[in-house]
Each structure stands twice: as C-alpha cells, then as structure tokens.
Length: 141
Image (cartoon, rainbow, N blue to C red; front, side, top):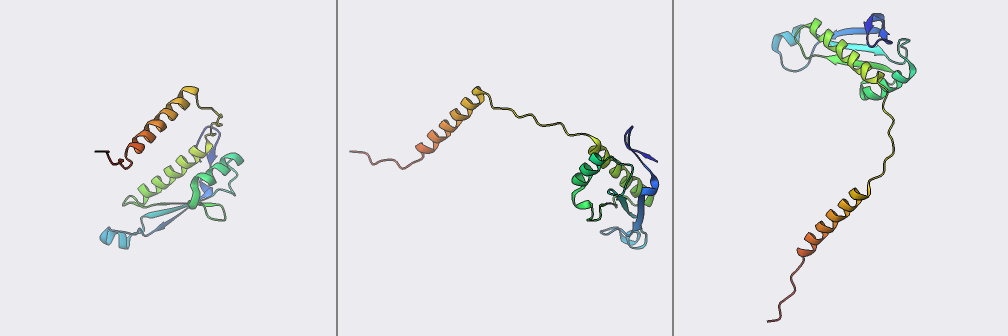
C-alpha cells in the first residue's frame, strides 16, 4: 500500500511499471540498459480515489492522462532503475496529494474607491505624457 494522505491509500497492484530505454545522451549505458520507468495508473478505474479527487487529478495531469483515463508518468532522470522507479512513484504521490487538496472557493471582491482613483490618476498621467509627444506647432517669430 502506498499511503497518499490519511484517507487515501493506493494498492501497489493498481500501478503498472515498465522499464524502457531512456533517450538522449549517456553512451553505452543508455543504449544497453533499460533504466527509464514508465509508470501507469488507471485513474478512472481506481477504487482508491474519491470522485472529486479523481476529477481534479485528471485535470491536473493534463496531457499525461490518456483518453482511457490512464495516467502515464515517465522517469528517466537517474542512471538506475530503482531511483527512476522511486522518482516516478514520488511524482505520482505528489500529483495525487495536490489533487486531494480542495480548492478554496473564490470570493468576489470589488476594487476600493481609493484604488479606482489611483488607477484613473495613473491613466491621466500617462495620457499627459503621450500628449506631450505630439508635434510641436510652429512658432510665430
């Protein structure tokens, strides 16, 4: 069991990990050893997640979630499978923790009278500056 919060835990059976060859520089190590990890977690099929957390997780993950509702996290930062595996799991846990936090509802506010006056004053000053840049009328000498 992977503990996310006090209320949310994920069974390790819900996570599938596949080791792939990492792309990019690294010489022989990167060409021969499959150290990169592709972690897959079925968000829509998981019984461990409450509905509101599931929706926020899909929204937070963005393009990392497939059309089937599977979250894919790729970790290839390190040279060893174990460190990449831990990194992918940590990133999954962080993402779910962010989704578990309920967003604070936005309260409508109105600008204060003083802030409106300040805004109008700066607009007036700016327009005066721009007006002064105009062409100078010819003098009557």
